[in-house]
Length: 300
Image 1 (cartoon, rainbow, N blue to C red):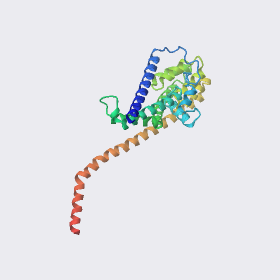
Image 2 (cartoon, helix red, strand yellow):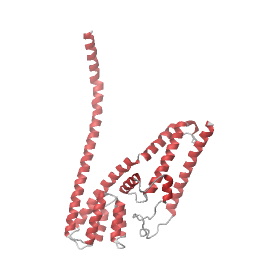
Image 3 (cartoon, helix red, strand yellow):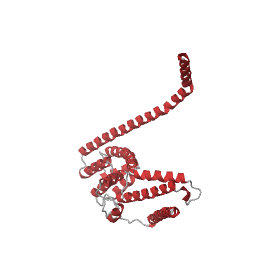
Image 4 (tube, rainbow, N blue to C red):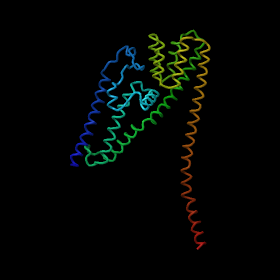
């Protein structure tokens, strides 16, 4: 009975791995061979330009709801991380990966003699699978950390772009040309900015709105609103607003630098404490032991 159960569990894990591998390979081949339509950004349903949403029946099978607080929270985190596809795809993939890695890790830990792959340590497989399952389960801190890193990088680039726009304030160039001149000063937001400029003459307002949604950070939203104001009314007052945003970016970047310096100082303090403890253990502690022995001998 136990041997039959072990074979069923092992067969289920292998079938799940084969199914996920087949799905991954087929998806990769489809992405490589499928030609992207020339005007793929025109028919939009979700505001990202993809127009693709996971069917609700898949959400019901996975036990999700688009109106649930956890789903909305992850959707906001994914937007801040630059994930422009449907958040339900991530949610379903996360649930499937959690189930797969959890089952594989539990099977490897409970039944190490039935690992079908020769030369693979059951303990190492169990640890790796359980760590991967834990990362899938506790994904929110990882997403928040990546969103903070991406937001700081975007803020530095928006600061550079805003300074260039202020430099072009007195010229006769239109806003589109000014933004084109600012593209070389970007790297993280360059694809999104180039896409916005490519969609500019089709509908500039919608292009700026989609740019704001793709960036997904408060700083990106404020920058997009400033660009929209400059597009509608290119007046000196809006350049003053841009100066205020530049000052705000500088203040936030300065706070980020100070926090990094403080974290580095804490790390250096901990690292510097190791030689002190080692010195105490090697040179001072033997004298302390000798002193204790001396006092014990005097008391006796």
